[in-house]
Length: 250
Length: 366
Image (tube, rainbow over all chains, first blue to last red; front, top):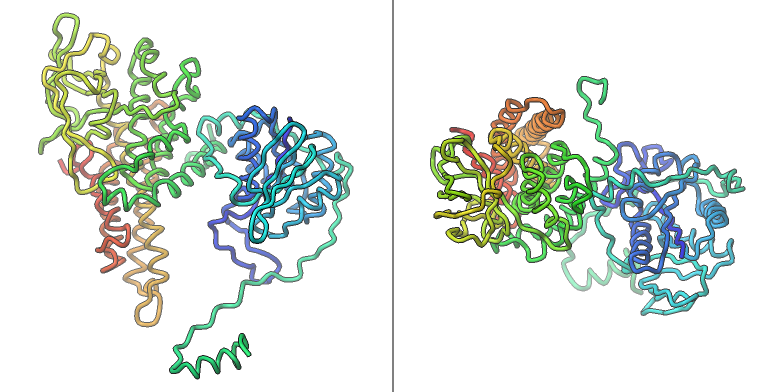
């Protein structure tokens, strides 16, 4: 079974992100970049499927400018067999990503596509679902456990207040939640081997896609700074403030 | 090689390796270092978990089960530095088997490599160590008192070694001794050899690592346990020094990162204490000294990697890193004031660990 995994280059989750002074976006100057944590979980799951003898090949795909090859190499060091970069300017919106991934799926015909449920920069939580709609493939989102049984895939999903297990026909799309697995550290020998693995570069035109923007970022601003707290003198004063200032009780 | 006289750009592999090792250090070492220090014991599964990085596999030839990457003093220094950002004791423990492997590849013969290296390619952690330092005030790395003598087809070893990492649990111990009539030599001794006794040490720092004093009383080994034809002690000492310097740099980096965050948040007189020049200058000094330590260490490692004589660079780096590493430890405690003195914060632990840099492999002051 061929498994395709999408990985996105994002600001490292340890970095405190700052908005640019002009409000046009996040300041990415000299900021440490990394694989989106949910995508890393996706890679780990695919590699585990391969180690279990279920998957035969794991392909890591990333969309962006040349710098995203760093994240593809990291995915290769974590155990993916080969990589694909779809070259675009910057980081396109979810619909464009989904269309490009659809193009890659048409070329590679994977049995399983694993994506992070969302990326920690845009927090859109859309690409997997859009890809499901575009390809007409069944999807299991927010997966905390997956199990291949014959030509079916059982996906345990994290839903409000509990877990739901669904059975999908393969080929299928899965988006990962935090508890699916704990990704490994890239081992030093595998980092050295990653360099020798195949990495193909496609343009959107190669995949028959014209990247068109439907969204415009109007403004990016940091959350409002929290005001200093006060100590109230009586219960009456507290109730009054909750009622009339905070308006959280009536 | 770069045309530039002075190029510190990391290769893609070095950059990725640093990321992976730093993540490991943060998740598997920093988080458990305090408890481990209090308990004076390495966390039970730490060394098994460290196998995930495959440190010792790197220089081992592929035919013997390793990764077959040429041994690299630069990579070794970067790994030691990055591991030490998590904890110096555990870092020293995890690079100890690698030091054994590297020395075996550097100075051992083919038969010895084929015999011992596959042990490091298995699924379980192979504890191997090097017994080098000796417990006396005037210890000089090139004047060893541990003595070996030839007796028919075997060698007999007598002497005492101290501060041996993993000393009590090691399956294999490479002991460096003065061979009668020949000079320095290294022998591979089994951890359960007759005549070998170990005593756990209780030290000021490096408490997360088992350090032991090993006593060799007429320990007998076969002739083929002697490493190579002759042992280049100075080269061994110089390479070790680079490793020790890298440990100091990593720990110093942990101090710097911690004090910057603490002092920016800690307020006195209504403003962060970093607004006080006396505090800001002290932090700036740490950053400057740390960079100098790093550059001297990397220079020594790069010279060694090029195959040139690096004795002087390694020595200068060791003296500088010992002095300034210890100072960074002291300043870290000072910057946190009363908080630095108490065990709630890790700076007093780093201070105690950095103190070891001036002691390991012979005091810098002698």
